[in-house]
Image (cartoon, rainbow, N blue to C red):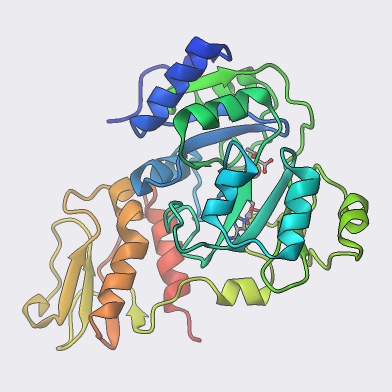
Length: 327
Ligand code: TXA
Ligand code: MG
């Protein structure tokens, strides 16, 4: 298991930052101080590390996560910045602003961290400790707030330990955060910037820099993609998705989990196993790739065997349920 018995408390000096970066390189999770709240960090390019973030949150759902970068230059490599995104990045980075932009052709942030979306949420945090860690690690770090689901966001290392001691490798202690409230999330996807989540940068400051009042949010901090447009852009396979399949019709593609084989499995058009050993973290890490691959097989229907609800199973089932919803 990648979960240590006890979480290390690291001071935010050069030795602590080097240790924290080494944990991230090993695929482990490290909570880190930003100027807003502590983030639950993991390697955004590694689906297993990202799945472990969702698992550590305890009541997980695969909301798209923010990827943190040490500077605007490295953020620009992950996304496509239009005029509004460039203006906002120049005005507010480093700082409590997250930009949702189309993924670039060279994107390293994995599908799972983006919940299968064609866009990516990028942020250059304002705290020295965060940027030192991000520079030392050298890859994007996915980081939701470092609390268990349903609990308030942590603004000091002790809060993180209350929720996550024993569930993550380390906490980098940077003292109390300055802002204490999450970053403002702005989407720059269609020419005009749109406010998705209010936060550390006020609407007034956005307006001053943009020259117009950004629309939104319809649903403040729902922690879900906001608006029907974003929902529709969630990755949905072309094939129909059929859940809890215990028998297979000829020509269907099959998404397996564990050792269970549905009746008629021999006649499947194609199949993939999310996790031979029945591990929901491994299954989550493979989910989006498996849907894409089975879709590419050309099958009309992807039949999914029953997935258990424990661990990340609930979030996997939620995601598959959306993919199966009539459209
Ligand atoms: O201040 C913060 O933003 C903290 C610190 C740790 O950086 N992080 C944080 O992350 O609050 P999280 O994962 O709790 O919030 C991510 C927000 C959610 O509202 C999510 O829906 C939105 O960003 N988001 C991420 N990617 C998105 C995308 N591709 N499209 C639309 N919304 C997205
Ligand atoms: Mg949160």
